[in-house]
Image: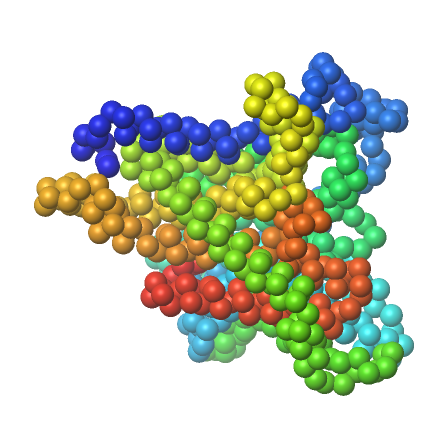
Length: 284
Length: 287
């Protein structure tokens, strides 16, 4: 079953057809979503009513276009704001963790490394509710004992950032640590023997070396945060991020405006994905 | 400041963010969730410790049946994803070379950078009563009237397999890629046929990929919320939805916490036994 071993033509054709069918299955829903963004009809379904750009640019109800829909634009902003915070936090913690696990040895290192991996195997909904429960416990405790009302510990944007950070930090750590592992430490030693302090050496030699991984991790973190639903659902406050707002519209029944939004998201995340692959490609 | 104290200090500085993150956001919340799940309400705002919430779970058929159903369907979805994804991964890893290979591999990845919401939306447009497939069927003449294909278990399964595919294909392609062609050739030279080569050489070699793929897919499916709720509608009976209902709609956090803890136990148990069966560790599989 490798090219060097001949197989009957029938088998090869069938195998090829199966793989083609698989890719058809993979692409079909996305193509359909994108196509109906241009349908001149109130519903994203057949019959095809002709081509229109109303679902992007129209500014009157009932055919409100995406770029004039204040509520959706606001939720895009909320998601963007959350994603920026999550990215900054998880990349910073990712860098310190990478140095900790790749460069230092300390007691219980392996145990700690395993605990660090755990957020990946905890379902997102559970991460969400456990943080919700814990922050409420603290908030209630503060209110009952000291009379202080800590508003940000109730479902809010702050909690959403914390919830998403709690598992995205593991992913950024893994990406950055993988690159740090390949770094030749003699380069740092050379810098130090030429008179640089340890910090200067790390800052001028190691961090630039890590840059592709840091940018890659930042893109991954941003996208994962922007698209997260499960954890966010449990922690969301009054400002709805995009996924939550979209989910609400989907359940109400939707106009092709949602298709237009989806197409926008696909283009943006597809572009970012390609960028991250491009950045992380090693120039060996 | 001598070198030893400096090294100590920097170690502590590096440990601080990790410790804060893991203790405040992972360990303490889960301990607290467990404690809350042991609360019994005796009067408004008065609680005592007990196992009433767990007893309620086991005595109310709706709860434990949904739980079992979610687990069984997740196992089915994982198996299906493996069966569908394996031949494709093998094709990409071993049958193709060069440009086409990296292109198809990228093509596998790109849909999954798109939000799960968008993907599920695509399936809804395809499968609903006024949807694309229903119209095509009528046009071809197979169906007489509109066909509703949403809101049943098969649809949930299609959506779950679709959503999980990436997490199966990526580890499979990377393990299969490292399989040396000459091993397969040797298998044939020694008189093996396609089936024995698959069973004795390819699958054992791909085992680490199969295990890590299955673990991730199972866990994601078990914890999935969007796909079952949107594609299954009111019939979905998915356990995460039940947790959401207890927390947000019914405001019964004690029972919801117990549900959450049970789901966590189930998912950890399956991940753990998957690792044990294949003699791997979490660090090797994920790291």
